[in-house]
Length: 574
Image (cartoon, rainbow, N blue to C red; front, side, top):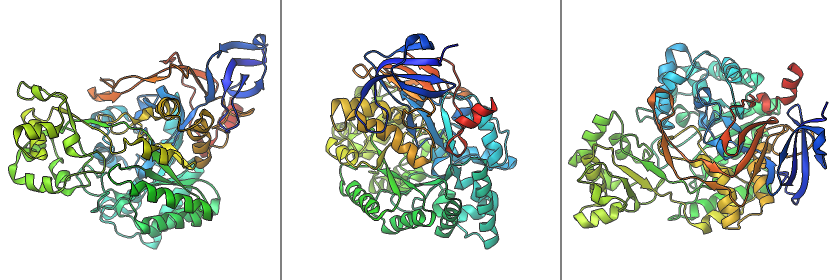
């Protein structure tokens, strides 16, 4: 009998710990790295020749919304195509458990706007064989998976379960009895394997409330009370386990920052803040955030930032677009059916308010938006023109120009908005902070607008190879070991003996991101935008090859990682 199930030979190893790269072999047995060094090919049942290739730990994505998609897409694409072998679900306080049967419809509707997950796909693809959070985890465990899943307890469903939708939406403070029940259910979730809790806390009427409910009202966690968060942090402190994820504006809101520091100090646990983002027109935003994070580090406060390091822009039509919700006039105009949107966006009486509330947070300036998909003879001359160019040619305000051609094409015309963070100087300032995690892929969300799940490949091809901002040793630590440490993955993120064999083997010189395309592969006849990767020769999850030469092998070796671990428990059960 061979000593190893698989041997990866002759590769250039980046083990994720930031030590210098070295040539060597890796032997895998029962899904675990059993040896690193020199391994004879005859000692393995299968030999992967990694000559000329890089070998590194699988990437860890801490910000996804695959809570629905994992049930119809075991590979959780785009993420797995780009080397992600472990992902955290339940971010921002959003999820599908606990949810009473009569509230399932409302739970799905909520996710159609805040995370832009198609309703038809959820309706057809969610099995709904759970009510409680522990039951949900059992369902996730039963589902085939090609990557590992670590779950947050999302606070939104928990508040609705205890308080009722109406009171939770109104922002009523929980009673002492309700707070006790919220904490009890959170303990139950932790006992079942949750890694902590998450919440979005954006100002419901302020400049950062870009993610709203389907009816354009604030999300439940937007209006929750600080005391609730502090009690939940106290649960983590008493148990000395888990971590917290909070989506809060990247602006200089001192009260929010003091609140996050307090939560970290109460719990003694890491708090992951989303998102550190550069706005090229306002660099003081990310610079102030980085100074604060450095100050936290100096004082020993365990607050980490997750940086938006991809330059993936937004491709959208006004049939679906919702990411200007931070401007009330735009929010109101883009709520409702396509017919209702068309009527409102065509209404000249609304235009002055829309012009007065020009969005700048998620996209760059409106005049810079490019027309990429005209749908009629009237609008075809504007292909590849900016809205500003069209406005100048027609003698119109840019908002009028954009909406007039959108209305002419019955909202089907496609636009591309470059992100507001294209400056390489600003990107380097974020990358240079060693405690800012990379990512914010939003995997599983905004599927008709965004392909940020490409960020690991973009890190290697752009930040490292093209721009030289980081060494490969540092990049692999930032992509794997650092997020694994923050999130409590107990034995992943590095290539070391005894660790689960989550491994990427890639062709560094030829690694690439493919052009964006539209595919109709979602349940319910829905479509999405994707970008694949080229150059991942092998991706292994728990020792099994899930992707070979950039193609899925239909191998479902991923696991639900209760409490951040699970490999040894699973092996013992087998």
